[in-house]
Image 1 (tube, helix red, strand yellow):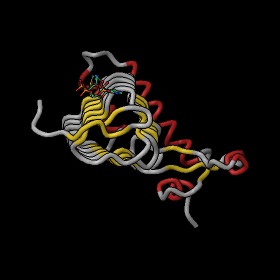
Image 2: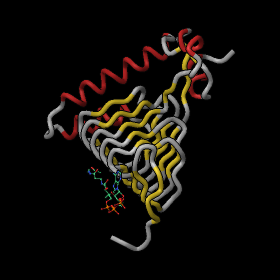
Image 3: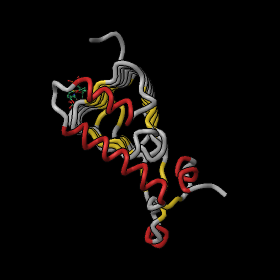
Image 4: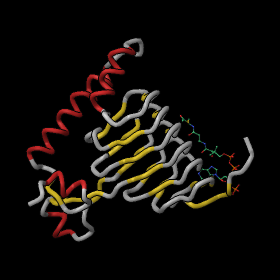
Length: 188
Ligand SMILES: CC(=O)SCCNC(=O)CCNC(=O)[C@H](O)C(C)(C)COP(=O)(O)OP(=O)(O)OC[C@H]1O[C@@H](n2cnc3c(N)ncnc32)[C@H](O)[C@@H]1OP(=O)(O)O
């Protein structure tokens, strides 16, 4: 029989109040509290906290606190990823982010979702869909990336966008719901 964590990572309905999952979220929140209360000049402490919180992060990660996530262990980050102030990553399902991808302030990445049927929702069971963001993507401030979305390499997501569907590579997209505005080429 699958554990609740195995069901969660497989995208199946699971119980978020499961003891193991609650313990793992608590551990992440304790690390986040230390990170978010650290001073800008405590670089060694911040590096150590991020290594504990995000064991699958590439070199050169830069997170500007405050930062929030559910588990941290479900985030897979390439090299030189940047999160500006106040980003939220609900990494209930895996969140995979490519090299050199940049996030403006207040970006929110949600893999977590709930059943549309109110009776199933009332049971407390929930589920999640993975999110994948390619290399060299720039996500503007306050964008929301919805569950299950993939964003192709080098694309730019306008500030305040709500990304509800997959975005191809090499496009500028914006709006709510987010739509392709134009392809990106050789421009600066
Ligand atoms: C990593 C960090 O920390 S980043 C720091 C925080 N900074 C940001 O988040 C800035 C994000 N920047 C943006 O969102 C900008 O809109 C950009 C850079 C992506 C695009 O800017 P421009 O190239 O000037 O856009 P452009 O003029 O080509 O816009 C084309 C159309 O898209 C619209 N548009 C541009 N951005 C947006 C947006 N965020 N939401 C909705 N529509 C938009 C424009 O109004 C324009 O519409 P129109 O053709 O009807 O007039």
